[in-house]
Amino acid sequence: MRKLIVAEQISLDGVIQSPGAPEEDVSGEFRLGGWVVPYTDEAIRQDLQDLFSQPFELLLGRRTYEIFAAYWPRVPVDSDNRAIADLFNNAPKHVATHRSDTLDWHNSHALKGELADAIRALRQQDGANLLTWGSGDMVRQLLAAGLVDELRLMLYPVVLGHGKRLFGDNAQASAFILAHSTSTPMVCSPATRGAARCAQEDLKK
Image (cartoon, rainbow, N blue to C red; front, side):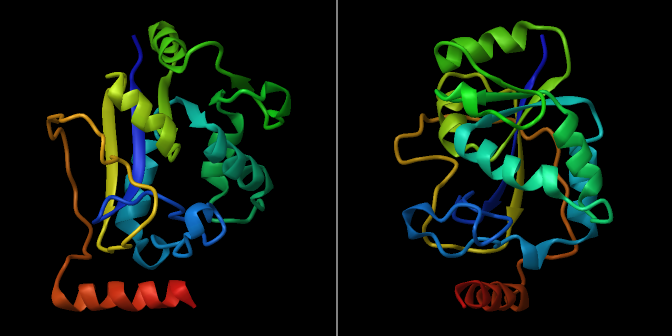
């Protein structure tokens, strides 16, 4: 049985909304998108390289699918993100959606039936591990159903105050086992907290 791995970029107060760019997800009047950008360094890039080093199939919620489908197929050949783009563009993509006729991104497939049942069936199949990125609404359902095998959380030293969170107020009480951790040269010293405030002010502009 293959694993379901959930990878999230997450703030100190648990927000996972719109980490990469201001326009990714502005729902709920969220205006702090792109909050990971000031903190991206070589250690973060290495962690992502490790995450993508093994074969995977993407498992995405509908909103994240649309964000990805609008970006990754259009990454220029000379971009630093081209290697990841090639992986995402070629990987099979399983999508939680009621509108399967609009899945235009290469190798995309709509999940059939109830979400939890569809994911259980996918996990039982042979093949590469399932990798979920973003897709907060779907991830919360999968956590509640006990279907997530591994959480890969990239914790950033910033407090956003509001936005979509990985764990909602009605999350089930759960215990996790820490399997592995790494840290970047960026630490939460007073200077770094100041930098976080500056970065947040920059995002508001």
